[in-house]
Amino acid sequence: MPELPEVETVRRELEPAMVGEQFVEVALRRANLRRPFGRGFARRLVGTHVLALTRRGKFLLAELSSRDTLVMHLGMSGAFRIDRRPGDAGDGNRARLAHDHVVLTMSSGAVITYNDPRRFGSMELVREREMPTYAPLRGLGPEPLSPNFNGAALARACAGKTTPIKAALLDQHVVAGVGNIYASEALHRAGISPRRRAASIATAAAGARGEAPRLAAAIRSVLTQAITRHAAAYRSSRFRVYDRDGARCVRSGCDGTIIRITQAGRSTFYCPSCQK
DNA sequence: ATTGAGACCTGTCGGC
DNA sequence: TGCCGACAGGTCTCAA
Image: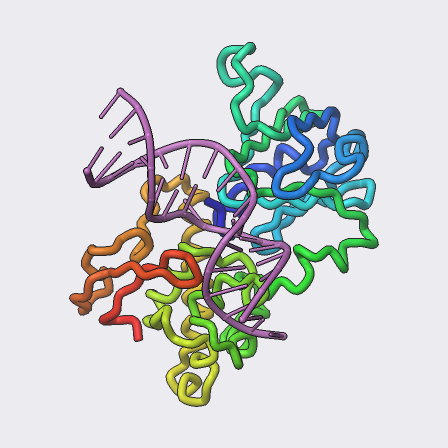
């Protein structure tokens, strides 16, 4: 489920359990997730300290005292669980949950378990000198919540692209961290149709309408609000268009109906009457 | 180089 | 109840 806001929320939950702590035990229940963990994964992890836990797009990065970086991605269904000590959360002999693939025991006694039914996630140790060329991170677009992400940056990334703007937003090289839900949500907030060619928000005419800055601002605000909601443990995260096909558009003054279409094999939700 | 389609996995849900 | 297809918030690879 994780797009940038969910990954950031996971980072904040994991941070106090990891940073400053040492890996005491690392147990792998299988040899790979989406990719192999890599040679000596557990051995290289044990004994190192976590210096910092950061995020880049949808990736979590644990910087280690060994100078390696533990690079983690949650894929579609990855999640971490933190237990205060082994066998916590009720019965000490509770059967191992299906899809618990990695169990990290920290020096504090906290046990961090990675669970991922679909196994589209990944965990790898990357050496300091390999980080600059590590393919999954190389070429990622700007962080949408950083100061260097704005209308100009977005327009530059979209210039010349014939693909629909919705598909372009899912391209992590254009902007890092936006996924299928927040792409639809941001386009609705910006009043831009997901079917528009990406390049069309970067033209002079689009510039006169301020479309690229509007979309960049919409991306920033929808992600920021989602993080805030998660941080507040707000239960019913209400999307304005995602998974709401058939419902009335919530934009004030719009009497349109949300529809669902398929673009590049993914569902897109939007309001044809207020998104042009 | 860019783009769309298919592949990778398992679980869930709705329809018959 | 059981079976079956459609679908799920993400990449990655391959062929056009």
